[in-house]
Image (cartoon, rainbow, N blue to C red; front, side, top):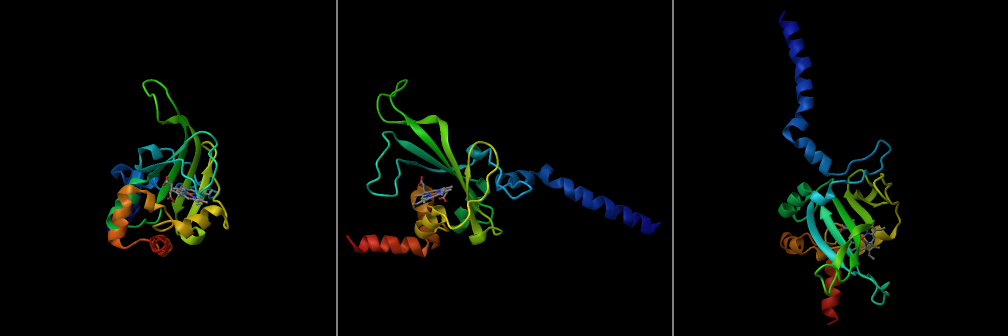
Length: 205
Ligand code: HEC
């Protein structure tokens, strides 16, 4: 009889455990990070607009004499909230960090705006950078074309080269994220590549 009672407990406990995550909200934390399809493609992080906003870059260009196509472009960077909280404590990103770069065009005078630029309602591009220990090099880049899932961009590629060679913290461009740069400095997490670049720039003045 006692043995039967124990068996019943063993059978019930794991099931209760299994339903708990979604009830306690832990399921939301999982939904925040990268979600993959069965064949390993990254699902589009649909709710990134509810994440933490890091910056808007306008007309950024990586070569000094790049010609502008005649109109401005904006990019907006977002990160999932739990990774952002971890960054505030450690100055670097935890595994499963997901960063989104959303690209928009610009609008000129419209409504009460007479000069300057506002962002276009249309999205011109959506790129994602994911930290995941199962990926080669620990990070992967993805480019989305609409809501369908995306394959990881294979190495070698310009994305990895530029981010690994110039980004301030763990292959991410924290030097352009105003609320995070000071923190990374104080935690001592700035990359060797970035420190060398800044040192060289200061030395040439
Ligand atoms: C020549 C350098 C360069 C190349 C090549 C490059 N990026 Fe970036 N990337 C940047 C810079 C600079 C930023 C910061 C943007 C800002 O401050 O608004 C950035 C930011 C990002 C971010 C935001 C998160 C982060 O890592 O800081 C994503 C996502 C991203 N890039 C994706 C890509 C993808 C995908 C490719 C390849 C298809 C790529 N990038 C190629 C320079 C580069």
